[in-house]
Image (tube, rainbow, N blue to C red; front, side, top):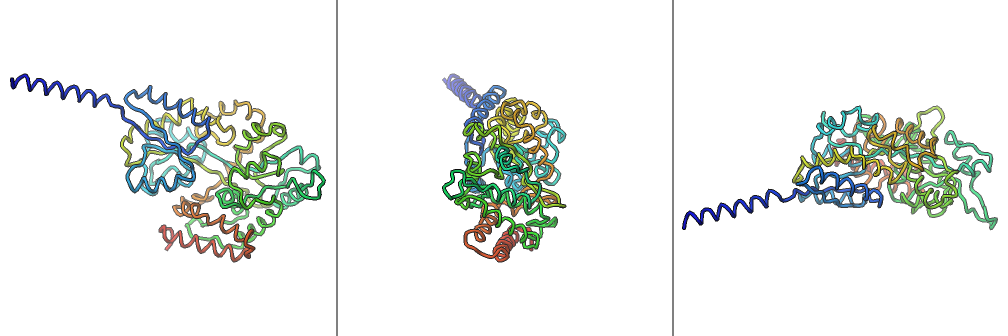
Length: 436
């Protein structure tokens, strides 16, 4: 009897052990890229991954980029972070310094080493000798303009700030002759969003200014930055009413709908004009945002990231997912979901990336997009600076948009608004341990 009972127990243990061992290991992946075509591409990548790793599954959670910061904070505190995630440039640069990510040096090597990536794209991925993130996308800011409108007025694309003001002023028009301007020369975003930060920082760098110097000392309150803000204030007068409420999409829509003849934005403009206003698609062009004569031109070039969280349940599978996400042929489909918006993060995709109907028609715009990557910066890593951990709070607390709105909405003096923002940034830098 005891022998039979013993054998029964062994059998039950074997059955439950087999069931347990065949249970799939589910990894979680956060994506802040939520375009329907991007989701389709990610779904195809999941199928490919689960075929390659039959005992694993991927649960994709789509998170608005606006919700990423609180989601990261609460999940880190509760130790419920996913295996992997894509994130904005702010987190790509700062998460490695916060100790939340695993080194992924072997993933970099498996992909082909640093030479497999475009020049400069790994600049914020390395921390204390190890790679912690990979660039999931490179997004330069350009000036998009209407060639047909410029030609109609015998105007050439602006070469410097003076040109930009002159041309934009000339293109403020009353097209329906009712006595009111209905097409504006330049769209200047100054809503409470990151769009104004990206546009203004490019202008600040182009005029020799910075927020922090190369030693991460706050140098925002400078003569050059006063000059840049005065210029921005004058430009804003050439922008339509309501620009004070523009976020990313409202900025883009102002150009797509024909409300403005030029606007600073990313390559996503191409797809939206092609789909929503195809009549003007042949007449739009992208160029580097004009700079100051005699100074190096810069623009905001965001380097998005992907990484593996240290305290996740299956970090090794997370690394395998990141590797597949970056190298799968489906990644090209992911890039083509928003053609022109994101430069391929791997050199191997660059030729095939160009082979898209929309991109084939905009060769000179693509040349400008690619060229601008050589002269770019981000709030977490200004040109010539090391990575700055204070950037995530400066961005999250809307310090720069609030400064601009104090000038343009509340009528505050430029010097006073700049002093206010400088003090805020100094407080943040001190609290984050950047300065004493």
